[in-house]
Length: 291
Image (cartoon, rainbow, N blue to C red; front, top):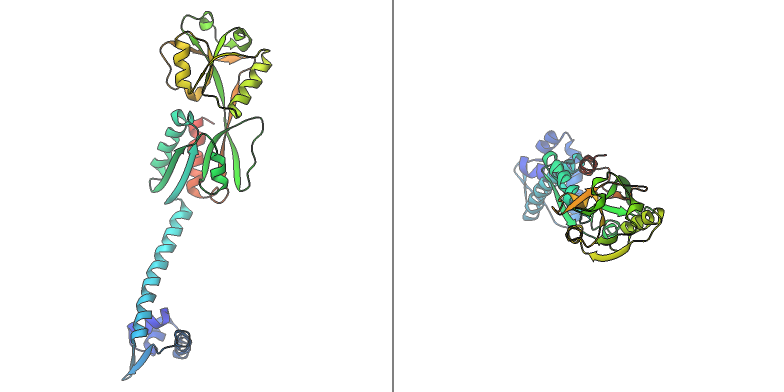
């Protein structure tokens, strides 16, 4: 079709052959093959040259449109390969949205302003979205075992420590760090811990310290847990990311023997894992995590 377009715009087979670097015979053969495929005449002789029939003009115009579309597509693909444009769909858990995701997104957008980010907080089934092709990157907490998923690359991001949150005036406020076993007789406030990886890490820590916590309140978030602690209803173990904003009525201390941690991983869809934009986002996440 591009050959036909060249003949129509130049007005003759010989002129088109010169412009394209072909022989007139090769041009004529390609035009004959195109006419057989179209099932209709595409050119008619006019003096020493040719002009397009209505069918030939239609195909010539379409060839121009296709050429522009192909050029645009090649440019867009080059931008995607270079990480200049595109879309990354990112999923993450609630407390990661406080101090981990925002600085990473800010850094990424400063470096890659033309790449769109679809950012959504998802507490359950986020990894399934990546395996199902509905998301590209997920930041998640893993338990004792790192989940394996076909087509997903799992990368260890950071081991995030828990901190003990005490009401102001508590006898252990003056200690740093606090042995976990010292808290065995306390009432406990759990801060939005659904069954899963976070619960596993705390259960293992309590077992290592030789006691099972007496849970007084099941709060629906780390922020709510701080409020109950401030009211003197118990103590709590909260992840560091959930303590970016600290209630004025509590004191936060490190914990040892053992120090509970939750393991945070990034799951990346293999199909996009090596693209420049994805690599830039991962770098921003690792920088934000301080690893």
